[in-house]
Amino acid sequence: MSRHPSTVAPGAPSLAGQVLAAAVLAAIVLAAATACTTGPASAVPYTDSRSTGGIVLYDKDGTAVTSGRTNDRPFVAKAVGQAKAPDPYDRDGRKATLLAFLPRQDADPTQWHGRFLTGASAYPDPAHPTVVAPDGAGSLGEFLDVYPTQWDGLVQLRIYLGVPGEATLTSSYATADIRVSGDRWTVVRAGRAGALGAAAMTLREGGADVPIEVRVDGSPAPSPAGGGGGPLPRTGTDVTTLAGAGALLVAAGVTAVVLGRRRRAVRA
Image (spheres, rainbow, N blue to C red):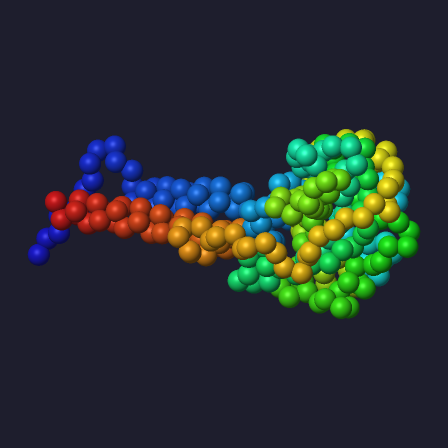
């Protein structure tokens, strides 16, 4: 029994070429998805909808820092927010304070527990709310000894704002996220020092005795989950995993179509 040689339409790409094209397409899709989540931020498995910008941390020399020891006193010399103080918190008498919150899996950020890391500081530039830690301020380790991390070593830093005659602003704030491992901490998501310019290095301490009043053991009412009660949005490795799975499904689908066309061409 003779076999008819398989034929394909003139000018049609070979099977190998079509499969290669499918693989290239999958690689492009996966690379694009990964590009959106790689870098420090991809290590943070949560999103805080109340975060309005990043925080840049500085040492006593005015140099931006991204890591340190948990027993350093103070934890950092200065924390500068990249989100402008909104009205009326940009008025005279404005003040800011730095707090640490403990992320908890399956809990809304409004339900996380937190504590003050510094007292309140008056600051001159409402575009850059700034907290200056006095030399006697405590270390991060002292906080962690009493309140250990609860989710992958993560701690969220927040800058809360106050102004005379108004309640402390807790519905929006600048944030940074750090991860603690042993006696070291490392920034995993924060603001960019270059975006602040030299102004952040020249801000001076003042008004550290101005009180700021806020309850930080929990929260106002938790923000509703998106999608009619579904899970909150996720970032980082979850998104990368989903995108990678999508890319593989695309590749599988394209390959199936190519093979189907090949079989039809052979039968013809």
